[in-house]
Length: 239
Image (tube, rainbow, N blue to C red):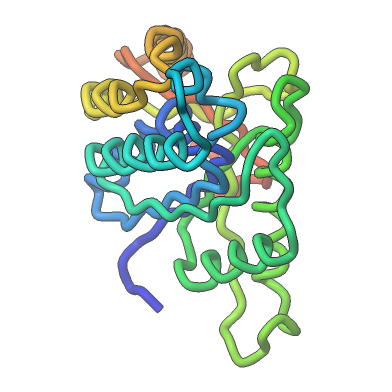
């Protein structure tokens, strides 16, 4: 069991953690957290169109390319990345995958967990990743699951912003100022060459959420990420 503060990020595809949580990852890495990203798939079938346009491309070549991209981005952000190679389009999380995520929860004992929105009619892989992540958290809290191990406590779960928020029943209730690490997040974007078309989109999202964060804080925020909490925030004072 580690004594270093930790965080767990569960990403459906190998680039999702960069677009949606790269700022949080870099920020907490700078604070001394060990951040582990678990990529359920490489996004090799449904999120690698640019690669598939190359003549003679194979599935393994696409996976290798996406792995290299994710590792390069993770090095910039300062996190560990683990690949489960579950497959995508569709992503199907078996009990083996569930229990692997349970093990990650119990090993890390994360201070917080980040994953996808619970609904995404444009990408069911994302919702499946969120479902199995939260199920794993519950199993990790169960005294009867490997009773020789300490059970998990109650780490907060934050759902990162989906690509089309209004259609995903997702509403931001946490804004994270990522201005201090924005340049690293943008640099990590540029590792994801297979999805270059998303670089500017997520740059605009960060600016928009920065504006919202500034309006809701009275401070000066330029770049931000937005999250939705799953569980109530327990405090000892309201101000």
